[in-house]
Image 1 (tube, rainbow, N blue to C red):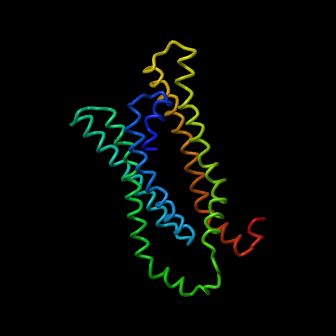
Image 2 (image 1 turned 135 degrees about the vertical axis):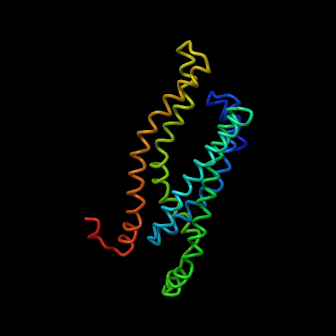
Image 3 (image 1 turned 90 degrees about the vertical axis):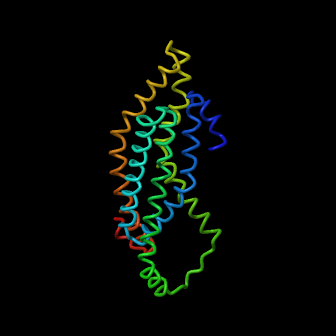
Length: 222
């Protein structure tokens, strides 16, 4: 994404102003998978406190950095809106780092209990690493498709709105960018409420369903 940023920005119709934002976001992509894996580890242990607290800390750190950086740039600095947007995008990386720090803290705190669970485990299960990875990828694909559905729709709008409107209207590129910002930004305020509620319910229920399935408790599904 870092190296493809110029091509992506050009196809999105945003020009060179989008390149720094895309490159700053590519850094966050490097650490977010690690954060998700550690969260999933605690989720599998049905210990939701680290999961929830890490999410809270992530958002607090992200918003704090976003507001602080943009205020410094726009009020005390050069007032360059491109730099302000770039730093606000980079805030996702800061939030992910803060979340990982919380998760590592809880892992070290709970390590003694985890070691006890490992010692109590009979250890009769033979795990093929390659098969486990393939199975994980295969089972993750439906969740990836469902979870990224709204984002994919947004990408379609992002890459077609400006070019389509330029073909059929007389609006300038700057006007179309402003219109797209209004059309794409306002619906998120309502959509994210529903997504947040659904994600919270799924996050809490998934470990319970997984445990019931592993122990073949079919009555739990009826």
